Image (tube, one colour):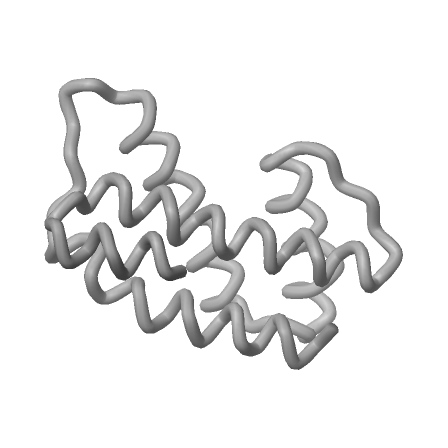
Length: 108
């Protein structure tokens, strides 16, 4: 999260999306491990998160959608050389990501 905030100050919005995603990825991975799930891929985390945490009500649909959205943003920002995320796209997700990470911590 620190890297996301630092890069937001510099206006590197694709990098901010990347750092937000990875902060959430590590929090989600820790939560899944604490619940007994071993997931090795990014897609696996999305799948198990949806199936085991969103569908069971441990996380909300909105929280699951935020995770998926950041995953897609990271993919686009990292691999589409002709595309850059903007402040309007990414900035509102910083506080939402922080809140979801705190929620995941509380579920550990």
